[in-house]
Length: 398
Ligand SMILES: *Cc1c(COP(=O)(O)O)cnc(C)c1O
Image (cartoon, rainbow, N blue to C red; front, side, top):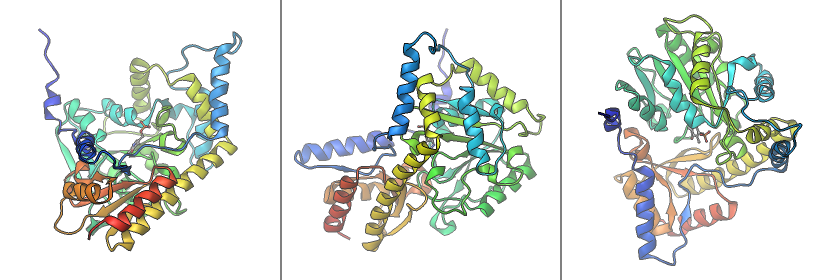
């Protein structure tokens, strides 16, 4: 007799984006001629740059010829790409060898799967508001003990270090949804906590390339001793527009230890997990990844990121100009605004849609502390961003 994994019953409703779709659809039924302006979704919109297209084309062409055809590659990724990433870190003064870097089909699966190498009794700490994958992947596997680190206006959206002992700590900086970045000192405090309590930090750096302030760390390994207590997960999605192409990586340093493991074991466990359950990222796509990491590729990606950051500036300036309070948007493609007092996130969603036709994301969808906040995304074509801010300026009744 088969039974289901009852842990699924413990998941909170994942109704955020379906509820947004439902309300948007209802609005369009009432206003069939309305042109809805979407600033809601964290999805890239600008085309891939020429160098990266060439890389992907090379990957395709290689498959067309007997001499260069390849089938399955290493589950851990193409050694050329792992080496290129190791050099990428070296440019930042971080020493990691290729064996410590695992290529994947994206950061979302890695952030969801990484918990499999840790014990089920581990207590998990997450930011609130939070990227929901961290919580839900742990709940599906049976961990119920989740500790929330509130990120509020009062603490500048910097997660409060738990006042009790936790074992796994998920940190996302630059942050989705708040757009906050953590300073060196703030990250040092987390590393110190992890060392003291023999905890492991899982650092999601998916937006690292959006950091414009040179004093802000782009990698957790810029912090002393982090290699002994942190895993870093990153992605080509937001950096190079690979949201639909799919490519990411995870760093499990040899030096990483837990209370019950010596250096190297966690790296071996992740290797075992990946070789068992993953058959490697696409060879075509990895060729594209190599192109991203070329000097010209990096330059072209930086240009597109600068375009999104300019979008963020335009949005934030408009919001602040209206007398509202907004955060983020400087080292991240998200603006986190405080909704007018007395309103809930969803009430503001309806108001913004009805008055301005702009669709955003209610903050409460990312956690309890997100109530009273609202996320606007800077991904979009400039003309749509401009239309949206103009409509907000002209039509939002405050
Ligand atoms: C978009 C995003 C990712 C990237 O996921 P991919 O699977 O690489 O596309 C990871 N973490 C956060 C917080 C994100 O917002």
